[in-house]
Length: 300
Image (cartoon, rainbow, N blue to C red; front, top):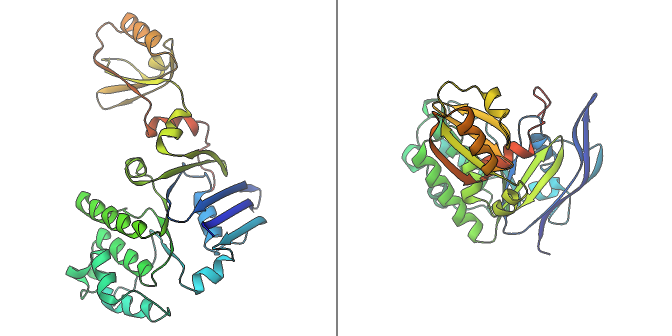
């Protein structure tokens, strides 16, 4: 069997709020999949159902052909959560030893420490560690049982640039052995650089599923960037050929349905505009376009 897990027709409500709406998703063994979506899209609820932490109101979850609890108990499914509690007075080495004792065939302590990159502070109490170091400890605990499917929630939060690079190098090594990775992240560059496949959620449903190139292709148009002194986002969004506009620092970024029409309108209305560049839609622009109507304040 090549399937790592499948979610079929998952629906979950919390009172009047529909968090997940008939979601179906299948992931093959060996895939590295990025789960993206704005707050309120249903990502966390979906992950909780995959891990067996939340029971769906409707639908079915299968992990390696069985239920999620059986996969967790067998050490085949593990998770790294962003805010997982770690005892302040215990060292990472002690936590790894405790976690390893719960599995029949765990990785060796040395391999866990090396893969997670915690050797320099394995003997230090968790209460003395930085946020990025604590994330590495959570990663080490997820690796301890030598899982076949690893689920990661914002795995590089609080890590610096070198920490992120080291983490993803370890992820490549992990997935190269045929293991499966599902990670939720707000760092779209990570999804673009490291995922084999991107699944984009909105309103509890999958709105895009494919490679980064395929998700980009789901959104037509181009992006125009320029320095436009004195312009407001509202004025830029009203230009012909422009679908959305935002200003970041000194530069304006316009999503264009017709970039030729947009640049003519821009230079006519704002002749002082300069430093102009037009590029194809990237993953971030596709993300914004596909989730543009996501309401704020919805349940995550």
